[in-house]
Amino acid sequence: MANTLRKSAKFAFSGVLSRVSIHNGHGRVSVSPCFSLQQRNSSTKAKVKVDLDSSTGVAVLGMESSPVNSLSLDFLTEFCISLEKLEMDKSCRGVIITSTLPKVFSAGLDIMEMYGKSPERCGEFWKAVQEMWLKVYGSDMVTIAAINGSSPAGGCLMALACDYRIMADNPRYSIGLNETQLGIVAPFWFKDTMINTVGNRTAEVALQLGLLYSAPDALKIGLVDQLVPQDQVLTAAQENMAKWLAIPDPARQITKSMMRKQTIDRLLSNRETDITNFVSFITKESIQRSLRMYLEMLKGRKA
Image (tube, rainbow, N blue to C red; front, top):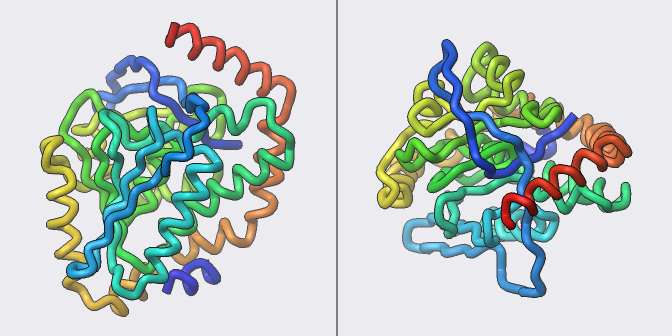
């Protein structure tokens, strides 16, 4: 079915910085700039840990790319390979995606993948971002996001691509597609995924203002499906997974395909154009200059 979804089936960056809160008719929300900086090191430590319980058919895919699970090319490659292996394993019917790091699910796209890189490298990176979304959104398996920390921009996209989202009930955690806060436009497939989740009007306001929602407000607008205490996120995901797996796979998979086929098809038919647009945008001198200034700001904060 994943193959069926795939065949039938300007840009997002993220970060966890200090936030400010605003009030509007859509509830209390947080907004912030949206890039993450992944510290480089020579470690070959795995960035993804997979535990498959063959007796239940449920895998837990834990992201463990310190410090904030930034979506680098290396991370995305390992993530996609891990998901593909589970997809091919007939004993695996569902996967819970979560973080092994404290206070963060994923801080989104890694700024270092976009600064000072060749057009070829930028294209390779964006294709990996697309692939991550296609594999999660079009998966045959039941996919549940166990969001145990903040999840802006690209991290939010990963969660949105899942079938069900459970978030830790902590008002300090935030989630949303906040690209416009830095003058960036979320691509059409980010937008489509958001609309499919929260509806057109809520998505329009959220995307134009680049809103990050607190966990309680994310529940109110339907961005997440359930809030539970921090120490119960994984347990709640496992309990919900059992409900989803009680449905016969063929019926659930065909229904999922009907719901998501049009959205997947739109990216598949425009994939190369989307990559070309991203590369053209991100390699502009003005954008590179902005990224450099942003990097300097991040380093200043760390200092």
